[in-house]
Image (spheres, rainbow, N blue to C red):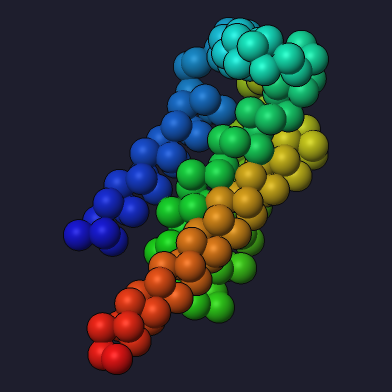
Length: 145
């Protein structure tokens, strides 16, 4: 059951990545809406107003976090680095597809930020799996004592 849910999350995340990066969604419009959200969140917290460049960088990182997290949960122990590598390759492919398209900006910075997002997602998955296992082992030890 959990595996199916993770596969659905991964598929949804991949679909979102493709829709936002190579699909018909306007990058300018999507970034503008994301910037509006960041402004709405940062103002009440007393944070400085985010710039368009900062919003684009954050969006590039956050875009790959869910796919990295799902991949990190699905990967066997010690194999998560393959997920990070695959996400790096996916980022390169996305930028390669964007390069010849008018209205799309392909950059090495996007590849790096996307890969960092995937790495953060995988790291979160690894840490949560570790925590989950420790919690389970602790509960089992307590129950048998």
